Image 1 (spheres, rainbow, N blue to C red):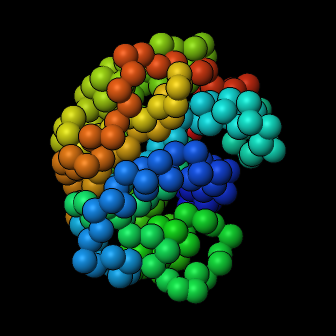
Image 2: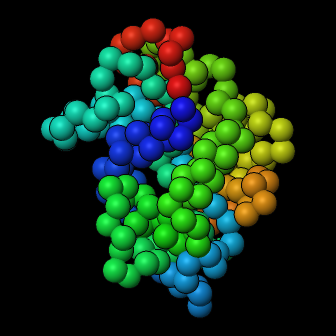
Length: 219
C-alpha cells in the first residue's frame, strides 16, 4: 500500500522538478564531484517532502492540468523525491541512455542510487517511514502563516535525532514549498550544510490548507 502511494505521489508531483528541483541544481552544480554521475557513488540522500496544497495552488495559477493529488482527497506532505547527493553538488541521469520509465524521478535521481527500480522505490518508502510529520500539519484545515524556523523546529521536535542542520525548508514567493531532510546511507539523520544554506530566507510563509475530503484520510 505504501509503495503504491509513493509511486502515485511521484507521478503527481513530477512537474515540481521544474519549479524547485532545478533551482537546487543551478546552485549546487557549480561544484562538480570527481565521481560525477557514477551510479551508487554518492555521500547521502535528501528526502524531499512537498507541501501538497502549495503545489496544487501553484499548478492552478500556472494553468497546469490537475494532478491526482489535487482532487478532493486531502494530502499534506507528499514525497517529491529521494535524491542522492555529494557533499558539493549531486549526480543525476546516471544511466545513459535513460531507461525512460514513467517516473522522471527514477531517470534523474534513482539511476544514481545504484539500485534497481524496485529497490529504489522500496528505499524511498523506508526513508519516508523514518520521518514523522508534526501533528499541526497532518490535517491543516485553514491557512497557516509560519516562519521557516517554526517548521524546522516542529520537525526537529517530532523526530528524535533530527537536528536543525539536517533539514531545510524551501518556499516560493509566498508559500512554503518543501521540507528537505538529509539522511546518510545508513538512514540516520545527518548534517548537510550545502542543502541548509539554500533554505527559504523569507521571514514568513503561508501553508495553504489541505484540499477537500475527510481530514482523517490525510497522508
